[in-house]
Length: 221
Image: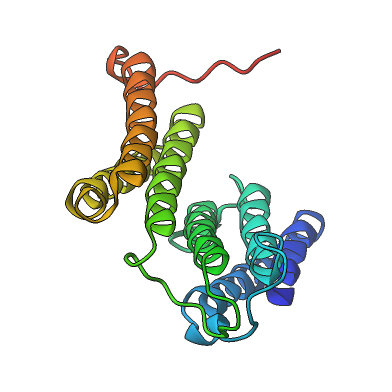
């Protein structure tokens, strides 16, 4: 996490001292911080289940690193965005979204982990409430990506949201409906249906009716 904060601080310093080495070092530190959290399986064994769900070590470390990635993307906006052929804000935003999705799944797994267990595991069967929570959370995350993609006119975010929503629907129909009991099945189906309907409404209102490109969601005064 310290590397991520240092990377964001270097991005801020780059505004004051526009030396290319600062930008390269900042992006490198943030990329290493992401890899350490996203690709290191040891993070699943660092801490036992906390007494307080959600407000735990994962939220602190992953949340601050995700925030640092998004702040760095903002600070490296054009014309400060290019490192040779690399578009730094796109990379930082992509890593931030991936880490936020990992955090979402970690929090769900931690919440439903049995007391006394030390190693966090991802399981998609054996607990009806957990299976339904994964499905609805993925759908809401996909909706968030779609909203941001329309609002900021980011095609990649829209496509990522639609792809995740498609994966969520596949999970719902081919996994959840076969394994969940009637009450949880209705809950998962209703939750995803509401998200899918809202996503369809957004697409029709802000994208499909505008041949010149996506409209921007009006910002309230």
